[in-house]
Length: 340
Image (cartoon, rainbow, N blue to C red; front, side):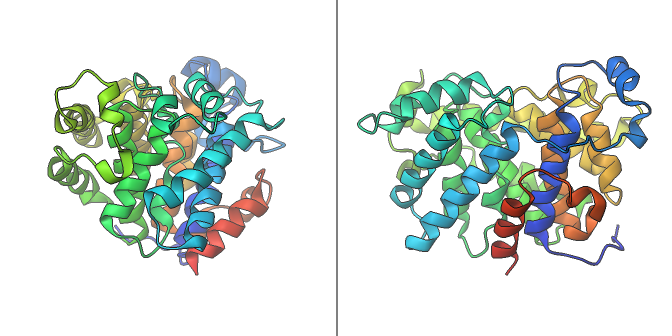
């Protein structure tokens, strides 16, 4: 399937789409589909709210984006170089008066612990949490050019691990960044799930010691390989459900019924991808479908928007929507940097 959209600035498109999906889903989160339809009218005509306010999903995406920019200004991306600005950005977000958008408890608990500079980040990580807060914000790592596969995977897992240390959160973040990267490079959406499954199988036993240190010891596993394999296995199950859903699901039914409500990382990945794959060349329809779901609507829609924007570029989004989104200047600055 070939798009007619010609503005292929993938980073600008992905970041804009992420924020637009977030803003569309903000008023619908915690509502079931009948309640959303009663509030917003037919889902295919769902308007962008006025003002177009985003949630912690976009705020933390920008925090990660700034940390990446800082780290790469200082040298070749490496664990120590990324960890410090990432920690500082997450703590700044935690302490910001704008952190008032119903943020997740895992992020709040971890960031509160990260304030203590003498505490190893592994001791702040919430090892039992695989909430979608880990991968709702990871898109920038898929958009930064000129990283090796090891750098991209390690950075995706590290940014997750600072707050969400569960192996499924790590694997889902890695897969989400991988999906964004593949789409930005022009991978055919029809083959995307197969590519992600192959990637998961290849990495199932690979623990990124250089990036994660001894994080695995906080779990209940006999080895780092057993620790990380748990996460990849749960993601592989989610990808299998997604592969079936792409073939069988009606666009008119709630996607959460097929691939999960999205409160946890592997379900947010699967349901966000499902909404994108149902409407590959209709990006606005895709994020509207994602926002009209019974689950974690803002996170599902922000992931859908990131996938659609990475694939279709900045031209995917109506100018009158893109111009109104909160934090537009920050989103455009990072997008322009990585598109260059």
